Image 1 (cartoon, one colour):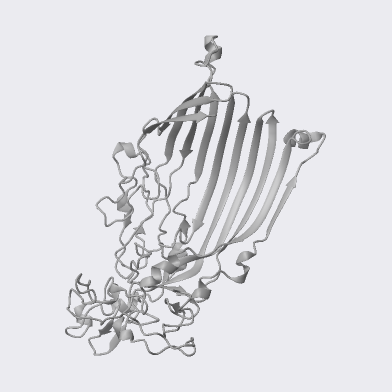
Image 2: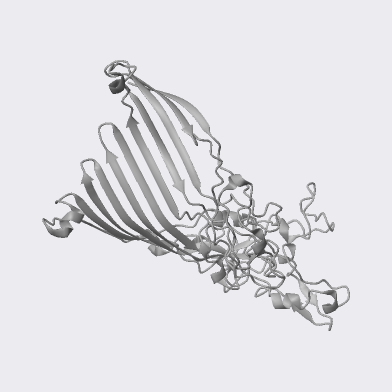
Length: 496
C-alpha cells in the first residue's frame, strides 16, 4: 500500500511524512551506500626466536594477532512504518477526537456526541501530486487536531555502525589457549523518536492560572499544551510550535540516535580427553541517547537523553564445561553402567543492569505523550546528588536505593538528570546437567539427561525492569520483577 501511495502529497507540515506522502517509500529505503559495507582484517603470527617477545608470544605458531575494522549499514525496523498505518488521512486515529469512540458508532465521540464524519473511503489523490504541487482535495477538518501520531522525517539517512577489534591469542600449553581482545562499536543515525511540536514552558506558565486568562478560557498545564489560549488582556497565545495547535503531541521518527560500546574480553579455553572448559570475562560499557525506538530524545536539550544503555552490563563472567565423570576409574569396574557419565553446565556471574527512571507527569510542559511507540514521556525525575545507598541484595526486603533522593521536579522546569545513571542487583546463576550414555551396540547408544536451570533456586532480580523507577508508583524503588525459579527437565536421545 505504501508503494501505491508513494507519489501522494497531502499538505502536511514541512519535514513531516505521513503515510501517503511523497517520498515515504524512498525514505524507508536505505541510502545508496547501504549495500556497501567496507571491511578490512589483518592476521599475523609472530615468529620471535628469543628475548622477552618470545616469552610473551611463545614459539612460532603458538600465538596470533588479529585486527579488523568494518562499516555496516542496516535498514529501519518494520515498526517505524507499521505504526503509522493509522495516521491521517489514509488511516483514522481516534486520538484526533475529543473522547473515545462508541463501540456501535465508531466515529462518534463518547464524551460530546459529535462526529468528525465518515473518513472512509478517502478521496483518491490527483495524479502527479508533489511537495511543490500538493493535493488540496483532503478535508483535514475530519482529522484535526492530530495528536499522538508519529511522522517519518523526510531527511532521514541510513543507520550504520563502525566496528573495530584487536585480539591476541596465545597457546599456553597443549589444549589450553588464552585470548585477550578489545571490541569497540560506534553507531550513527539510529532511528529514534523526538517531539516534533513541543510546548514552550514559559508560554504555558504565562497562561497556567485562571487569573492569567480571560473569563471562561482554558488554562495551560501538563498534557494540555495544545489549543489556543486567550490571555486576560484578550490576546491569544499558542504554546506548541512550530506547527501550532492543530498538530498537538506529534513526534518525528528521526535518525539522530547515536551509541558507542567498548569492551575488554578475556577467554580461556581448555580441551582434553576428558573435559572441555571455557571461561569468558567481559568488562564493557554502552552509552546512547536512546536504547530503542520507544525512548524519546529530549527536544530542548538532546544531551539530557545521553545515558548508559538500558541493556548495559558492566561485568560479565561465564563458565561453560563438559566433564566426563571417572566413575569406572574410581570403582575399578568398567562396564556399560559405569562408563559414559558426564557433567555439563553454564555458570554466570554478572553485575546489575541499569535502573531506568521515569517521569510521566509532563512537568517540563514539553507535552510529550505516548503515541503507540513510546509508553513513557521524555521527562526525567530530579536527583539531588546525595548518596543513594544502593542495595543490591533484594532478599533483605529493603528498597534498591534511597527514593528520597529522586523526586518529581517543579512544574515548568526541565530536569537534567539522565534517565539511567546507577545499576540494580546482579546475577548469580547455575545451570547444570548430568547425563549417562549407554552403549547398546557399536553404532547404537541411548543418552539420558537430567537438566536443571537455576539449580540452586536463587531469587534473581536481574534485568532492565527489575526495579521500579517511576516516582509516581507506590512501588518506587522496590524490586518488582524476578527471573524464573528453578526448573528441571528430563531428556532422552537415541543415537544410531
